[in-house]
Every structure is written in C-alpha cells, then in structure tokens.
Amino acid sequence: MSRKYVIAGNWKMNKTSEEGADLVKEIVGAVGQQSDVEVVVCPPFTVLESVSRVIEGSNVKMGGQNMHPAVSGAYTGEISAEMLRNHFSSYVILGHSERRAYFAETDDFINQKVKVALENQLRPILCVGETLEEREAEKTLDVVKTQLVGGLAGVSAEQIGSVVIAYEPVWAIGTGKVATPEQAQEVHAFIRQSLSELYDKAVADKVRILYGGSMKPGNAAELLAQEDIDGGLIGGAALDSNSFIDLVKSAIAQD
Ligand code: PGA
Figure 1 (cartoon, protein in one colour):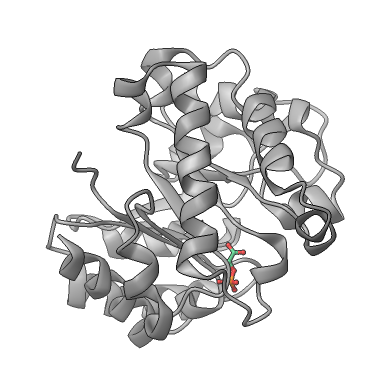
Figure 2 (figure 1 turned 180 degrees about the vertical axis):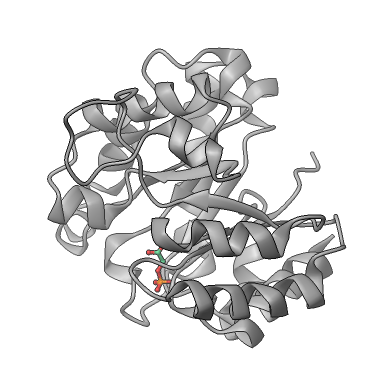
C-alpha cells in the first residue's frame, strides 16, 4: 500500500511574520517543487498571511494549529474554519496534547472541530497519544482508542480519507525522548486496525498516520521505515530550516 508521506511542522507559539516568511523561503527553495512528499507548515495565526505569500506557486501547504467549531460569534480569542480557509490553509492540527492539557479540550469538543473542519474543506491532523503515567499503567492502547473513536465520531467513510492522524506520545513531546520505532509501530498498527474496525480495511489502508514527539533528522529514518508510519508532525526540529528540510529529504528517501 503506498501512502504519500506527510512532513508537517508545528511551529507552536514561535516566529513573527518576518521570521516565519524567512524560514518558509528556505523550505520552498529546497523542497517546494518536489511532489513525492507532502510538506505542510503550521505557523501561528498571525503568521499565516506572510507564509501564504511565500508558498504561493509551490507544493508547500499550510495549516492552522487550532480552530473553533462555531461559524462566528462571541468567542473571544478564537478563529473559525472559514478564517483559516480565507488565509489559504488546507490543514488544521486538532486535539494536540498541549490543547488537551492546558486548555482542557475534550474528545467531544475536538470531534466538533474535526467535523466542522471537514465541512469547510480543511484536512484535520487529529492528534492522539498517552501520557507517561498512562503508558506505565499499560493503558496506552485504551487511551489512544478512546481519543480516536471520540475524535472521529460521525466522520463518514468518504471523509476519513481527508483526515490525517498523528500519534504523539505526550512523554516524547519536546522532551528529547523519542519512542523507539517498535513502540511507535505498535501503536500505529493498532490505530490502523481500529480504523479498519470503524470503517473497513481498504479505507484504513489509505489514512496517513504520522508520528510526533522529538522527531529529528537523527532518528527519523528508522521511524519512517516502519510499515504504518507515514510521516511526522514535527515541533522543535521544524523551527530550523536545515533540520526540517533534512526531515523532508529523509521521507523522500523512503519512497
Ligand atoms: P516536538 O513536538 O517535535 O518538539 O517533540 C511535536 C509536537 O508537539 O507536535
């Protein structure tokens, strides 16, 4: 089964408009014309406009890091799916563990966002993953399944093809502690198996499942070589053009 790799950069709360444009110029220059790997950058909202100008005419795509499910209204500090589309976003990261932990996002709320994103032609990157405590209590697969089933409730077999799943063990995010390829593959295979139960095997075989959590050029090749790992959601290493470009090249080399 050939699935196109996705290398997505989650910039989190980093970069001004100018810094973001500079970073993306280098990415576009190095890997903006190839089409073997899908390259996505997810800058802060204030940087979407400057980045959108730089990626125009290239194959680099852009996404938001979050959105609110309502169309518009009294939601101070939030932005809608339409606003993201209006700024040329094609993806949106939803349910990131930092949103779950610091902003108390529930599976139900994340599910509302997933559905609204899909209705607005935005591809959700739905994040799931366990904490260290949950892993040590051998609850990893249960936690991931609950987040997956909750996040995808009401998403149809046609829509699931537009969804990207990111498995991000919370204990590996920003910590330098990466999951071993075997640990990651076990959960990725479990996610694909769960998708096959929720939909069917043919549908599950098409969904891209990314790994996230301290992925960097030194450890990417062996993670990306795993059967069910179809790319990466990159935090820290996405803030430096050289390491991000190396990660894209590492995915190209897997083809
Ligand atoms: P990290 O972050 O690569 O810095 O661990 C990944 C993420 O949070 O998406």
